[in-house]
Each structure stands twice: as C-alpha cells, then as structure tokens.
Image 1 (cartoon, helix red, strand yellow):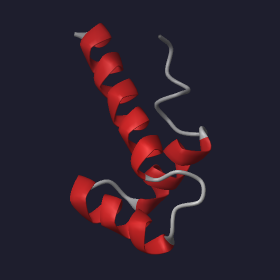
Image 2 (image 1 turned 30 degrees about the vertical axis):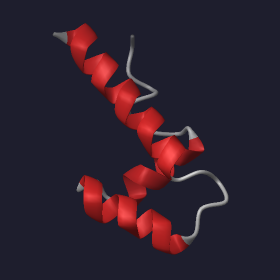
Image 3 (image 1 turned 90 degrees about the vertical axis):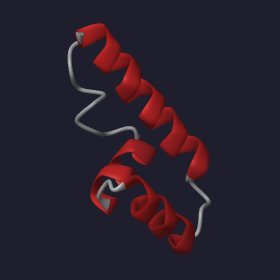
Length: 58
C-alpha cells in the first residue's frame, strides 16, 4: 500500500507541475486549486519542489 500511495503522490505532483508550470498565471493556479481540492499552498509547494510529499521516505 505504501508503494501505491507513493505512486499516487508522484502522479499528482507531476500533474500539478504539468498543469501549472512556473510561468502560469494566477488564474490558472486558482483553476487547478478549485478543480483539485488542494490548497494553493500545497499547489505552490509542489510546483516549487518543496513539499511534504517529496520529503517522505521512499
């Protein structure tokens, strides 16, 4: 189960990075936040590579 959840976290992080690249507008960021249900803080952290998921042991 841990491996599955790690895979899901990686997939979500990759999708966020693809949907909201560094040059994305604030409007696009809010669209992803609204659609995903994740906080803007988490979305911004995933975009920047500094997030709780990347610090978990794999």
